[in-house]
Length: 268
Ligand SMILES: [Zn+2]
Image (cartoon, rainbow, N blue to C red):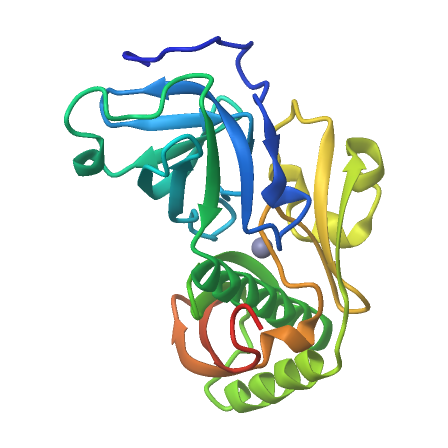
């Protein structure tokens, strides 16, 4: 990457702590600047961050980076993973004139847009509950999905799916959300993860061959998936959902759209 300053580490070895994977409720962290890119657009790597870089259908976080010395603040418009690092993408307009970026070694606070992130956590957990219900009660596998804050879609190999089933699925998902199931995140050695039948069903075999560990997200008693995303700690925190659409994308490929209908206010 041109314009990069600061030390480089072997490809794929992340610099710094990536708190989003271990503590989804961490909103901000004090950190030191490890690297600064200016081209093609301003971007920063920190030795610790709370930003989620996107993946698994969950969009990256937005937020701010604030320099401790003088309170100067840069909006973070997105984040992404590059060779294992979480790179914070700054708004180019905020980085002008040249030299207005934080420097390597400076202390900053990284803070995510928490209401947006919390909405994404609730949405992501709701989609896993949908997956769990559709597998348990209809035997249909998920083939893909995507989300925005407050709404999302999942595609299933679900030949028997019909418009009439939509109401039934919605009621079942809401019953599971109200049941107050805990959501557990674990990191397992690869061999252990590959021995779990539920994980094989969710296409764990598509994971890159080189990885040594698999992060799993379990909706206790309902669903277990290999997943890198951020989730709420209990399904009750999601509130309830509405199924807002159903589309047939072919004989067996069916798409279900949901949105959050209520629940705890972000930050409560
Ligand atoms: Zn997921």
